[in-house]
Length: 260
Image (cartoon, rainbow, N blue to C red; front, side):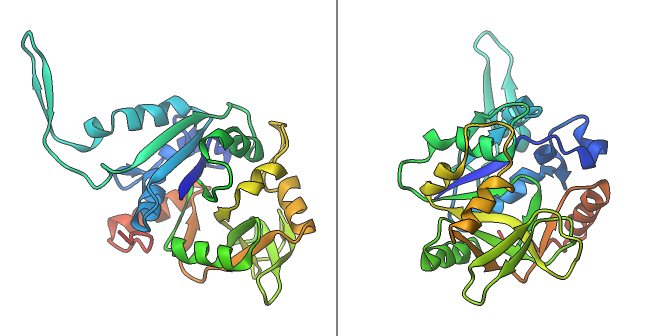
């Protein structure tokens, strides 16, 4: 399945880093966080990526355009017939990465709408944000999505209360979606989603609409939003402290999301 990653936001809560680069390019270890997210999906067999670019998107293009330069030792021949030799192989050689400009100021619903042409009609796809790491079983979310028969299945996790809180029935159907809950013991939107192509019909032609507002409300209204409960590791990178935490986990060899 194709993997759509939202990479266009300005990341204002992480201004220490995002003043100079888009949040998906903030490093964890020696690689940008979006690379870690992509490695998780690739580990589960999903290697066709569509990156929705916006703020400082040229830096993401530059990184992938020069991927071999960024990851391999190199020999340069400087004569009249110059050549470049890359010495190292890497595990990303079978990836495809579509870099789609979805607008500097676009909100999330419009960004997803903009890449509709890259998802074949009727084909389901995976959707996530470019700033959260998890040890989630991607293929288990897909199985839960197919079993539920809904338009969208999202991962429900247990972090702090500033994310979208969910009230979930025993059968997995989501009854309410609250973007700004005031408590920390509810399930919240972890951002790892499985979507039918019909999701595009819920996305208005308006760059000011967030996926987490009207489209989610409409899915709940129609009984088309389902939850996959993930009880394992999930950590966003919204603040400098969270960035430092993820980097320390990586440096200490204790990164739960490193399933590859």
